[in-house]
Amino acid sequence: MKCKDVMTPCPDYCRPDATVQQVATMMKAKDIGVVPIVDGTKLIGIVTDRDLAITNLANSTQDDQIEVSAVMTGNPITCWQDEDIEVEIGLMKEHQIKRVPIVNENLTLVGVISQADIANRLDDSLATTEIATEIAKPSAD
Image 1 (cartoon, rainbow, N blue to C red):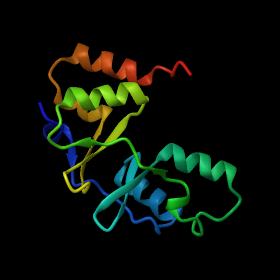
Image 2: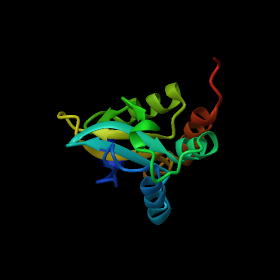
Image 3: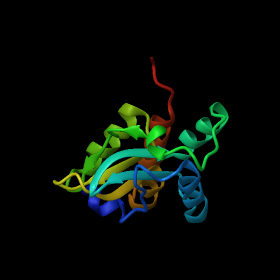
Image 4: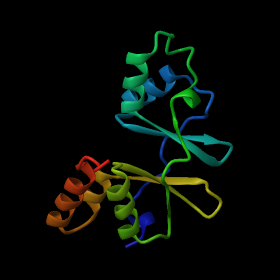
């Protein structure tokens, strides 16, 4: 099975000059926990709900004044849309991440795969439970 068969296609995204408040509002309205950051057509970063929570706690600046580029994770771990899903799952396990942006050959964002996508779209429920457990393990660092 390929990543394009499992991903959520056409995810919502923001530009790097969007404010933290705009991104948080989008997350709440769409009930999502990740927003890819796109410059033109190229994926340049990713912001999670955790990033926003930490930013809020650590920053005294108003959220409507902070650009999301200041809090995003640049150069996120990605996977190709035609890559086998096992490769993507391996990346999730290796890097302890719950969501992976999916790109095409032009590095254009085409989708996102989350733990929920894997659980909902793969048949073997035992395998998806094991995957979720591996992703959730704290790193050995």
